[in-house]
Length: 244
Image (cartoon, rainbow, N blue to C red; front, side, top):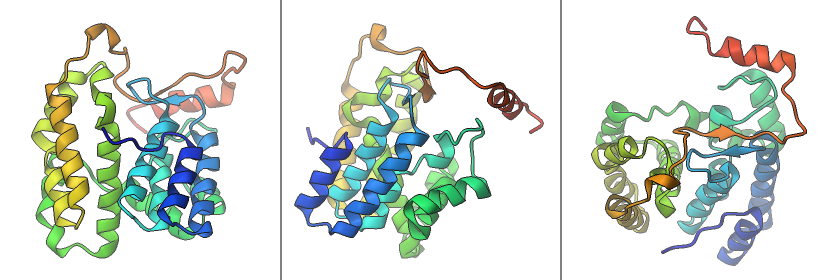
């Protein structure tokens, strides 16, 4: 089993050992610092700390020698989809983008935006797979982050600890299997091999039902001494309305 970084300190050490320069390591550290604020008390559906998933994604990118900005963007790839900026709303806004740009700069923030806007569903996965031959280098960069995210999500059998494990398993076997060919086509055969091995391991594994969590999606557990402000609670309720 390949071991990727799960903490910031492990990631910084990995980058240094792999020969990344001080600027790249500093940019990754800046991404982690804003990540601490955006993902406080956040967990994946499996119960895994969200920051560990983000660090793991960055670590996979580093292991496959992605350029420095991609590693920092990988660490922040879920900032707009799952990050908590203080008002309870998901998605991008000028204020959120400005905050991330101040933390990590324009190039890394732009990569996070492009990752966020990448469609990733059964139909778009097929479309992406079929047009890899005409993708720009920038499009391949975003796809590489996405593939690293999928690998990290399935390592340690992560999807099997969620309430909707069977559904996620079917999705993996029916749609995400295309990730293996995608990694090959964009020039990362080792990543393709690791994706294939990980998907196979997940398909063969058996996790006791008692270990599955009640959650199917990412969730937050605020500290007991914290309470939700009325303004934020109202914002959460409005955000859930179908007419939004």
